[in-house]
Length: 108
Image (cartoon, rainbow, N blue to C red):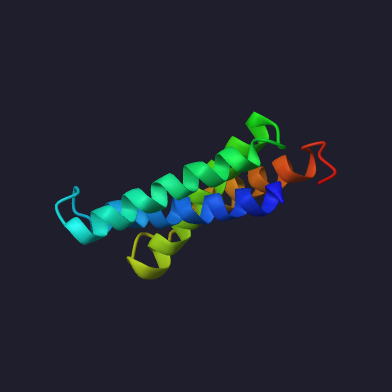
């Protein structure tokens, strides 16, 4: 179950990153409230995952999901640059996340 919590926490991290963009510096009340709620949910889910997973593994995967996911969605939905070097860097983040999962030493 820890891995499910961790993946959900990473997805929430993507959500709150987008929320930060659309809250326009927390000047839009509704978006700001949703962003803060999703931030809290992300941290709660991460803390639940850390009950069973090593700190470095959980935190690395959480930030990796958030960073790669946000960058990919930025390319897809916000017309952010899609040059080859940027895509290769995102792929390296994903490779790091997969590596942490594979070599975490956890049987869960």
